Length: 116
Image (cartoon, helix red, strand yellow):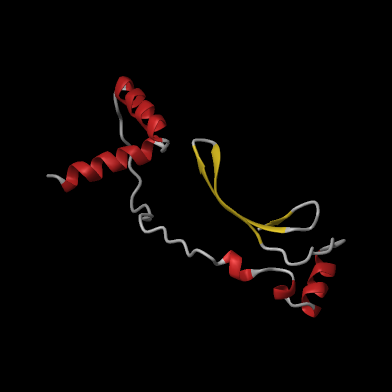
């Protein structure tokens, strides 16, 4: 979440792929502009005496629940030596598909294992 120069509160959902930022969603959450604060203590005092629902439309922030079902934690790091032409081809294919090349390697391996 962030605040514009005019005090509007925005919720921005994005991903970073190959050093590119891709916006997934941007929502205006402001009912009324949030005032400028001189410091964190002033902001804390403000929120102790004000209800955020007077300033933020939380229903818009939670309008679409998002599930990242395909995210899986890394279990083990490995070192893999590949011939340079093979690595160059993998990087080229990954760039065409807009995925990191390590992810492409995992996708290829998973697909191959699923069909063996």
